Image (tube, rainbow, N blue to C red):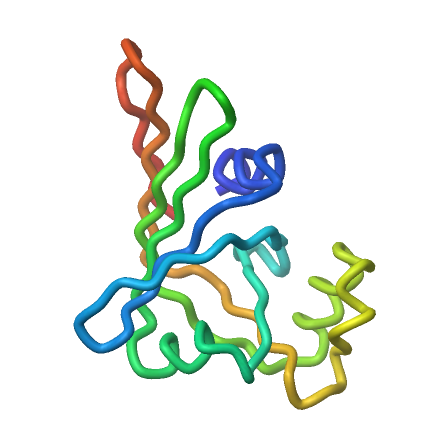
Length: 130
């Protein structure tokens, strides 16, 4: 999991895909945080991402660092605890202009049942389960 986290942090931007009915929806994200041994992402409850995840928590994440890419197949589980939200926002203080751990909008998700694949051209694919 640490390797997956570091890959996302190094890329700074990754792409999160959710399901909206029968259609995929993809958008750029930038938050990744480890809290209590789990890998977390963050969004706003008012965003379509949160609404889609409430109906179908399965997601995929993809990022590219210029030479290798990662794909993560995961289930995102909401964590409503203030401590989890605070940990994320403390890691990304620039988000505090829009979010607060005590507001009714901030939501963080931890990944569970996850598999990641790190690949580059000409190199064997590496699989990581977490």
